[in-house]
Length: 244
Ligand SMILES: [Zn+2]
Ligand SMILES: [Zn+2]
Image (cartoon, rainbow, N blue to C red; front, side):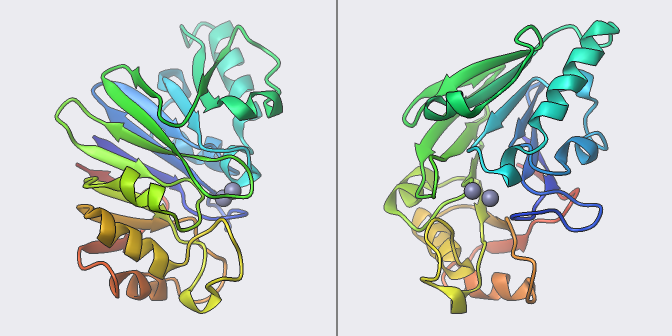
């Protein structure tokens, strides 16, 4: 399984970068996890839009879905000029179906997903778990045929469900929106220390912090997570590649 970080910022993209977007390539399938601001442009450095199979949206905040309507137009045009042969499959929380406003169902096939459900895209197994956030949000786990697993938290506050869902994942890609000194200021997001605690209690193989604040020294996030988790902790960065 190859994971490429397309964007790693919370809220809005830094110059020439993107908010949440992660490309997973596995067993011939190309799956995009979230499609925030700037993702559609940067994605094309790694994957031709003709070849993208599916998009999974964790939730409907703009920093996770701002580019979906531009993506719909890209699929429409590529199909109309014969460069792409099939619609894009878009997976979205069933309770958020009403907030999606795709206009061209011939080009985008929307599939409802729910916590506890299991589905496959190509040879990749996907599972979902509800997180603690201001609006409904699903964390997602991808399992390859060889058993390797990636868990992506989406946006979440600290909760036991996230620990259980992340259990023994090879890679935990987890939001780290705040520094430890900000603990308790905002529900529905994690401090780096909380992200490290989840990683430690779940016994994951390695941890990638993402969904960053736009201030402070991001290296401090790694130090704060490492106070709890003794495995490898790294900061996500634009175009980062992880192979498991
Ligand atoms: Zn977010
Ligand atoms: Zn959010």
